[in-house]
Image (cartoon, rainbow, N blue to C red; front, side, top):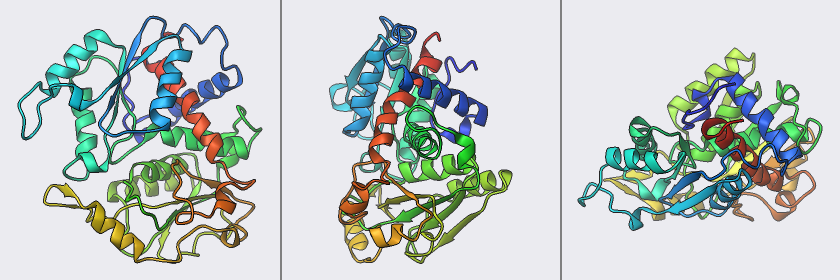
Length: 345
């Protein structure tokens, strides 16, 4: 599978065969983490990590990935660069992307809800870099999508229902029931991780249910993609406003807070208003009683977990929680993406 030079902005833009090839390599890298055939893939090469927003897992996992492939990850922030914005003079994206392409073998960009004036602006910025760069642009989370998280998710679920760590079986996911449920929370989270979860679950043949209060629907394009993916796989897609509506028979439960479509007003992210609205809803926390209604389901979350609001400690730290396995998988899928798009393997 030749993916050299490819951008990764959303998994929907890669074929299923390309996703499977990436995941197969990720599993191999997990089983044989420090095997010599992987440790020189990016030898003497640099990967730029451009962070508009801070992170825990994203920075750590990408730096580890570059190191384990024999390369180097360089941390960049916009305040340390003279970049043109709507209100300040500076270097254009065209110029920055072309110059950065002369130095590095890839650029990862992370830009989330509070760093953009309107929904989709972060994703547009990534696509503008991809337009001008001569090296791959990797989405490290924007305000619409989080492809590396989606790959880590699906790998983790397939490990749980397959042969265990490093031995995922994606056929075992076909026909299983995936519940994405909104939850209360104090963080006013963007849509990127949950939307990527819908896309990746439906690509691999899972039945998809979205449970959310009225007024918390996600991107209509993502709903359309999910519906089309499900139809292509003979699976079902539905939404419900019942907080208990999707647990019955679920195999994977993903409980997370997200903002409303009205989160942006007058070019500003209204975080306080979203937090206040979220707090007005109760009864949406994933707990042991709800998990007991599933078909021996697993709990999944991209982290950080808003414990006590999104999910109880009993579930998040329980024996059917996949959160740490999936966090680990961020390293392995990112190594595979970097190796295939930037290296020689």
